[in-house]
Image (cartoon, rainbow, N blue to C red):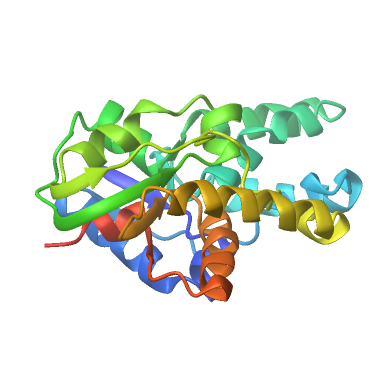
Length: 239
């Protein structure tokens, strides 16, 4: 199957291993991965901050970049996936662009949903001994309703034990520009999140949104917690 890979800004600039492992994983599962060269930022920070008009030119540029073929578009970040899926709403005043945005949105999948629901795969042969906590990001879990797919894949990782913890489904406090505009509240939210996680003494923190992992992992690092932070793609490529 031919697929397009949307790398995301964070994947490109800060977490290249996540992007690499996502591509390697897709290739391992039989996909031919294409990288649309003109892709850019999805505009999620601007959209999240309410700067919709400022984000629209970038939306149109990305729509055009992702129209080069009709193959599925895979993203390793729930926040970026949801942002692109919401373009049609923001472009409703320009019907032609809204239609184009919806056609792109219909081809857009987060990595775990694509693997489980489109490819029909639940085990990728991964092995990672240890105990882990999984953080369901707001964009993936709340906005897109993706709950079972990441857990299905993680439950099939040999040697990995997933630990439930209190308030597991609450926000980590990142929320794009929220963490800047409401820094004190954001700081308390991630402090509470880490406190609940550390009650079960995990070896790993796993998530499907790098922005959340950076936020939670940063708090863990400041507290000196000996927890390894991993994107789910990195886990699924562990052997």
